[in-house]
Image 1 (cartoon, rainbow, N blue to C red):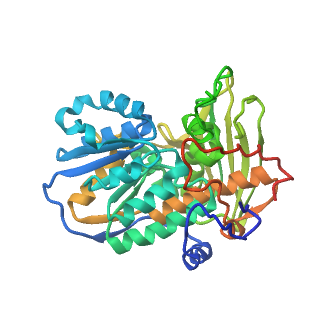
Image 2 (cartoon, rainbow, N blue to C red; image 1 turned 180 degrees about the vertical axis):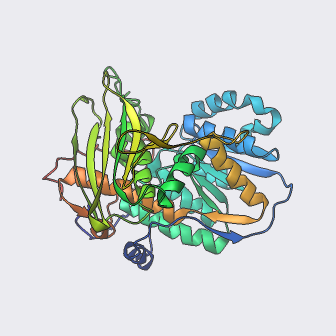
Image 3 (cartoon, rainbow, N blue to C red; image 1 turned 90 degrees about the vertical axis):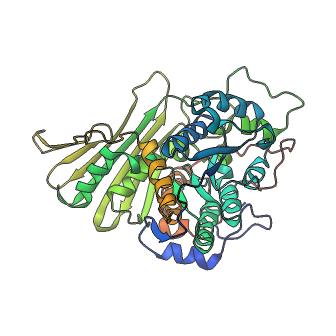
Length: 437
């Protein structure tokens, strides 16, 4: 494996990527938002959807896809574990025949993603642990399937570069990529950030985003790996606890806050990040931090901060504070702007009758675009926003000031794509700032 400060490639790389593509991406200062091109109008054709990853978020994505369009049919499902498929189907029963999936199109195991892609679907919903996302995205766009990809898009820079390459393949194959950074679809947050980016409150001078929650799905203290279960299967079952699968909490969870920092800054790439973090409450066999504090450096001397932690029995909050010359915007829930005296300058007022569910808005817009023959490709944006969170993680893990430029020189690759459930796979040590180079 290579790391954030080393640009040597491994002989057994997890994900392939085009070096010319990634070099260009590193040189471009704008993170990039979706481009739209024309495609064949789907009219009233039944759109067959395949779900890859049938946990809570995947089941939610399937619900939103079915609710977005009356002519969407859930056609195939795949998950590492068959029990996840059964549980998902029970939750989807309210869609009646449109959510009935024939037994022969229910696939389990680590290769189930490919079986779903090959089953005759038009659209693939990718919602597995993000360590698998680049591989699944590549297979889908190469097969000319439209894709909804849940965040984050990768857990390492080899994955980010693979996603950037897949973005170009999708353009050539005229297929869509829609992202799962849900707050970008929230009407209230769109309104607030629209006013920020329009300059209504003056220039942004700083941002402080927090994501403070309890520990998410920890490994139980009495959990013991059965003798007949391989390392890979065990770690996939407890995927949020392992960096190669989840990317650590700053990617799996707090990426919503780092994405909104990027949004407030107009999606201009940061210069660098400095951070700290560690494990205070966690004493389990996982290898992820339970807290992060990161300062992102931007052009013109602007610094934006992330405060993130997963502590039990502690204060929790998810708040964005965007400080501008004329006032501060507080969100994301019921966003408002206040002046220096605390007086409300602006408050979001929902449009009567408009859908406020950000998850649903995401899929409504995705499927509407497909019906209209418009291909959304958010690949560059979603890869770079993932890199934005990785930048903060690596700054905290290494204890160094990590630049955006050097981040894109990294080929860090956490695991091979060829793993099987029965394989031995040693858990990487918990990062120690000052020792990881």
